[in-house]
Image 1 (cartoon, rainbow, N blue to C red):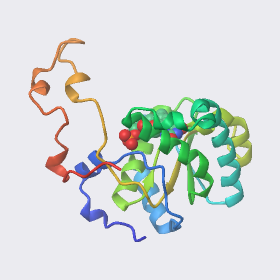
Image 2 (image 1 turned 60 degrees about the vertical axis):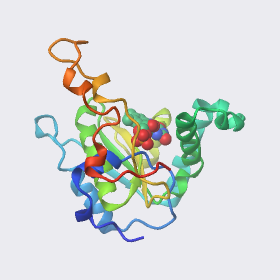
Image 3 (image 1 turned 45 degrees about the vertical axis):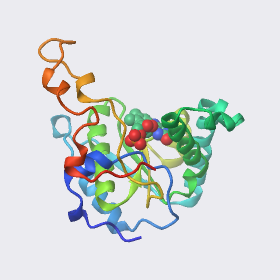
Image 4 (image 1 turned 90 degrees about the vertical axis):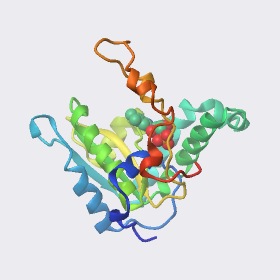
Length: 228
Ligand SMILES: Cc1cc2nc3c(=O)[nH]c(=O)nc-3n(C[C@H](O)[C@H](O)[C@H](O)COP(=O)(O)O)c2cc1C
């Protein structure tokens, strides 16, 4: 699949339509596309501009297979009720059902996703690492790539670090599987601004937000699309 022309996706369309993509095609991700993603990542803000991030690209199939095994073990434990009895997924309310089903599917297939990107930094530097991760999510959206921020590998941190040679003072804060999406992008379901915002004192409503549509202003920037 050809990368989307980034010029066709505006910033706000990307903001409203970037969502967790957990199903991918088998198509490879060219270095030139991945470089653009990381060149966007390093534009993020960093505490004292120290830029302590490190991006570890894993393409090696055997390493991805091993990571996939550990990732699966975490899900098999965390999502045990669904793994042992998949019919429980079907019984969930729609929103939850879609998330659990796609989480389960990624846990079964992550080894096949062509790129595993580990976003690393000092253990105490999460505040600097997460803006870079958000840039990656948006850059992927702009290029037509799918990805999702995941943390399941962290239950196997020591083994992951040994496999990948990650130094002791570093942490893989996020694992982003990157590939060409089979899922559709956005819209995303989020609580409205009015429910999560106060004016002047915590809990004092911001009346302006209450006058705005509950579903937000997405359609101003991107045409409505059915959710996958
Ligand atoms: C800190 C953090 C850790 C996450 N870890 C995982 C994970 O291990 N596996 C996974 O499938 N999704 C993971 N997610 C993705 C969330 O489930 C996802 O962002 C959320 O359900 C919203 O999805 P949407 O953008 O499609 O609406 C994580 C997200 C965050 C912010």
